Length: 123
Length: 106
Image (cartoon, rainbow over all chains, first blue to last red; front, side, top):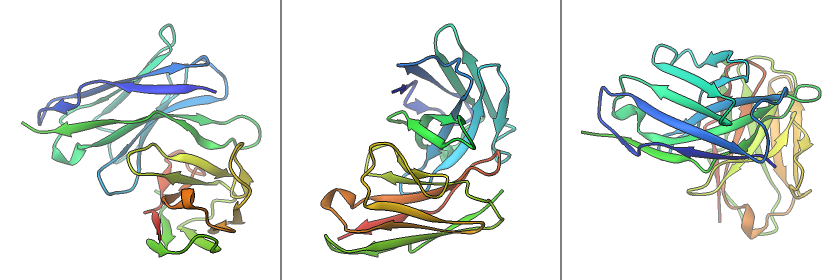
């Protein structure tokens, strides 16, 4: 069973860039049916899908965040990363990395999650 | 984006009860719906995918149904461990969206 673990600063200043890394263990990040996503959740609110990356480097972003988001992948380290620039207090949330499984017919959607990391935007 | 409208937002129930949560999609999404369970301070956990397929290891008291725009999650006999927040999620579009959540409480 694949496991995911987020890492990165828990406090980011307004207008700066939020940077997080997800380390995947228990399986290769370079698996044909797996896509790798970032999702966030402000306290007491629902989940917001941020974007995904495939092992080839192809990305898809949520249009609401697209102008500020970059997701990258390092297959040699079994890691993928999130960058979100020009952050404000509205970006304060729990950030999760996750796997989307697209094997078989249609796949499962998001089937594995990291434990999440809280990022606070404050000066 | 495809909007997922979930109801109710809060559901009060007791151990042994049968409960149903509903999710409505703003567009036809075939069967591409998942149901997730989240407990406080924890990551969501996949319960059901493809509207009605039970994820491995999930108890059989959980079931899902529906297609097109209307979907339901049913818990046949509530157990103490089931009190949590439940989310529907569509994966028909390349941009995934979630319902607002249903908090299941005693």
